[in-house]
Length: 200
Image 1: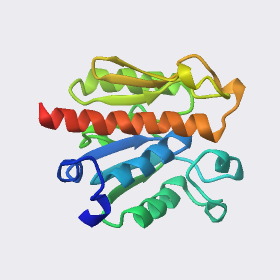
Image 2: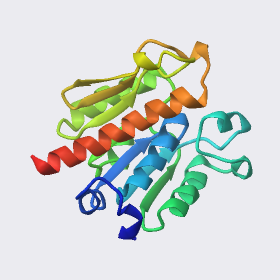
Image 3: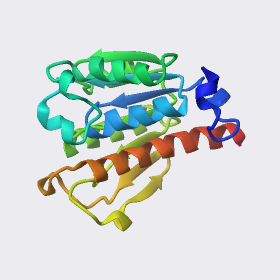
């Protein structure tokens, strides 16, 4: 399978294939982050979500018409394996909660926060930083609306990285270009941090 990644960044494949990344939420952010990580050659993903695919998801999430009614984790698993059959995937169909998140993602090298609601984002990020202070967490903040591409940024504070404009809210609506741009910023940050850590 290494031939698939022959045009990767030099010397990245052998590092990334040993990495496990957790993704809390498989919606617009989570499904698109997972897709990019699969294409990069990350070895293992742990994906968790409690929802089924709905038609309204298809404007920005990595699902298709024949996924409607399936659980997001099962549908996404199928698509990821169609990209990279060697990818190891652990799925959790259910809600990520304050009680189970540390157990679900206990063996990851990086956690992706991909929740929809601000209060859920807050407790997950704060809880992770308190209980897993040496493991990075990457979240999305501000990806709604149109345009303002120049406002998208990466902000880091210790083990936390936030991607987005950090201003827009859900009332502006969600559309594929901005959602997927932020998701790919997050995937890019994850890969960059992993490879930099290996070189340091």
